[in-house]
Amino acid sequence: LLFSMDSKFIDSPLNEDGLEQAYELSKFLTSTNHPEASIKTKELLDILGGNNSSDSVIVSSTLRRALATTTVSLWPRISKTNEKIIVLSSLQEISRNIDTQSLSSPNDIADLPFSRLYKYCNLNNILEYKSYYDTTENFGNKRRNFYGIKRLRSFSEWIFLRKESTIIVGGHSLWFKSFFQTYLPFNIDHDAKKKKITNSG
Image (spheres, rainbow, N blue to C red):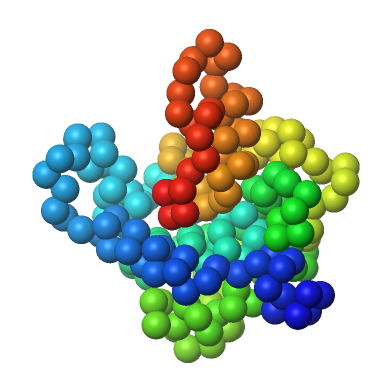
């Protein structure tokens, strides 16, 4: 299974624990019981839950675990709006580890595997699932000349070409940490620059 399209090493898929974590996140995002939340936090929860989604867009890394987490955790919104998750090569994880290599071909996505998502998303086949992804900006596995800092810059440039005011990103802990280290002011002490985001964080 090392070099197959269902490899457990290259572009490793989300395991059952990860899927359950994503499902718990989806329930949290759609719950109305957040008495401790500030007004701003409630506004963000409305956006993530699909109650106020008109000025936002969902994007994800090309790697299977990020795509699966994004799909399951935001499925209540996606099933309501019928929008597509935009798959971006610029969000692929920053590392040389074998599990950060993408199995997805250009303009496509690999099997997540979708069979594991059925009980969370209520879709029947791969073609139904694939209709929820915009893969026009997936250029395949990361290239040597499209290394970490170039992917960070590419995503930053992409953001400013969008009309939406909110970009919802499904990605990876080291990528996020590197992004905030690069773009938050040098003299700002922030957890996002020092700590990795937890699974489904």
